Length: 483
Image (tube, rainbow, N blue to C red):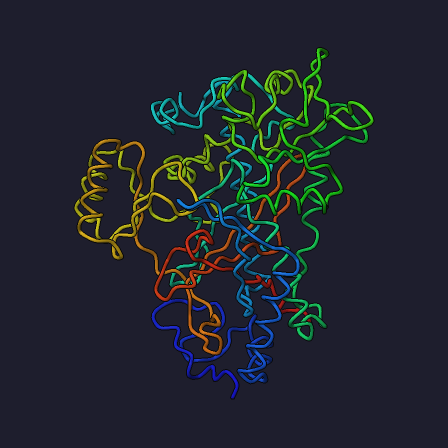
């Protein structure tokens, strides 16, 4: 017996593959027809092949628990998510517009602060931001770009349009899983890649290398390294993967040193080798114990001074996280208008700022209907999903909001889009999902062809993070105009 799409019930949500009449959307027609030709045993067998490939390739992520760190195989669903190339081209344009404006914003904050003087962004929001680094004031990184790699989380509401849920400008992760998802899907569904309608994703690491190389200070053939906190970090697989794909060294802080001449060097068995660009995957506060946390063993003493003097390039630059703040997120449409004199191509999700009394009162009165988020948490932690919460949890969040209004925002509970997902081995049901494309900006800009689709594997859940039970799918950008 094969999948009967007429029996598939997407319900009230926008489904990525199937419309409410039970018919495949245009980008999904070939995929759904092919899946229909497979019986349930064959689909289940291919899912098992995908799971085996993930184990064999060592594709893992780390979950932090009270009992310790646990490495788990990457959770993957075999049924891809499809998006038309025409819609994606517009979305990619909007993502580049957004990152360009955010980089102009960050650069302004560390220089003239014109946007504050002109009354667009309140001064106190920046002064009270946990990610504003006074140590970065007056610094001008190459191309005046602070966030070179951005992971922007997108969602689709019931209208089928993309909305930005949040920006990740500090140390965004997940791109390796996007690339590995495609590799696995090609293994288990090879027949579907025999035509050119599914656009490739393989160019990312080449583009990342070019973006990093363009930052190098006055060097034709720069030495680039990926700086990792080490094997116990949840994204260590990705750090090693990207270093290997780019053909550069993966290093820890203890592998680097700042010499008396102010340059950064890598310790090798052949002696010291100069480093020109560091793609750092550790947070600001652990970068340099001479400047930030004195107890950090992850960073490199003197690194900030080397960066400030232009002796080494850092991506992303320290201080970029000031625009990562979920409170600043609410001002991004105005930031785009201010710096670019353009309307945003992609809209924000409606956001209530608890720092504003009127909006805070509304949030507290409607907390059972809203999603409440802290300004600087990630991974789905520290948030309240109102409709799925208890009265006790709601009361606790009301107290948190009252205690520190600046630290909280709220958004409507979105009717997140769904996609068919293989559950219980042989059953296909809709599950909610989001999308994290990756945007590069340096001398040039680049957006991944699609991104990392994350899926809430539990029925009815809106939390897609892998650390909290979520999974992932391959994301297909399909050129429906190819003949």
